[in-house]
Length: 104
Image (cartoon, rainbow, N blue to C red):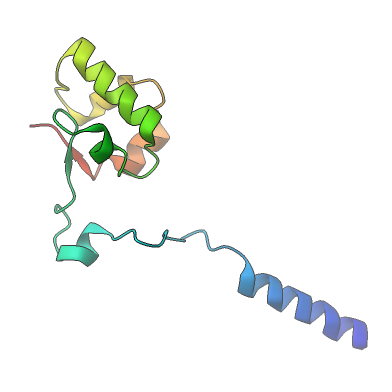
């Protein structure tokens, strides 16, 4: 009986302190939470700085630099799907950021 209670306690503690798959880093505010407007944080991939691009989920400084380099070498993006031509951005990353990017 004591072993069963100990096993249950261990499982319970494991669930309580396990990282959540929906964890949002401290200081990160979703566009809707900040302004109530889902489009408030849209990033224009044709004009955004490296810093602005790096605010997108899954896009770090290296990938942001690759986006700027691609844009400088090939001209502006025609449609948002063109960002998948940038090294480091595949279907998975694109699907994460597609609702946050725009081309104008």
